[in-house]
Picture 1: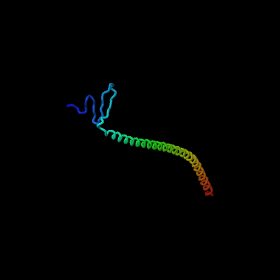
Picture 2 (picture 1 turned 120 degrees about the vertical axis):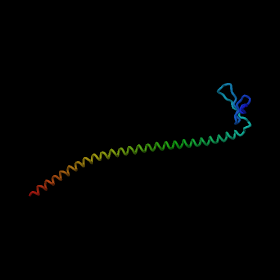
Picture 3 (picture 1 turned 180 degrees about the vertical axis):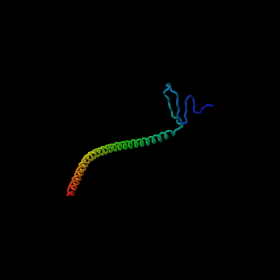
Picture 4 (picture 1 turned 90 degrees about the horizontal axis):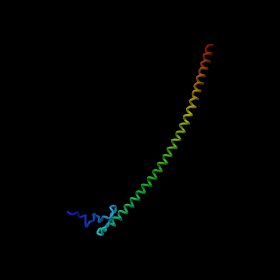
Length: 127
């Protein structure tokens, strides 16, 4: 049985396009069958859809760029906050070390005063 898509040595598709073998194996010649005039409408519809897709792609690109900028700003803010926390921790450690040594001095002075008071009480209580 003969295939209805083949006719007079050329390949005919259902959409009305005809592919004819060219002299070179890399080339294909296409011809639109005039019986299928609604192809122009289909092409116009596809052109409109491609335009819509292009608009969507541009919106996606602008949104991605906005979000990348936002992420970059957020990273800079976090780096600044991290540097601030690091500086504050360094200051607090210095204060703790200074206050810690002051506490030791206070404890030693308190012990000396207590010892002196106990000494004086023991001296006066014997009389």
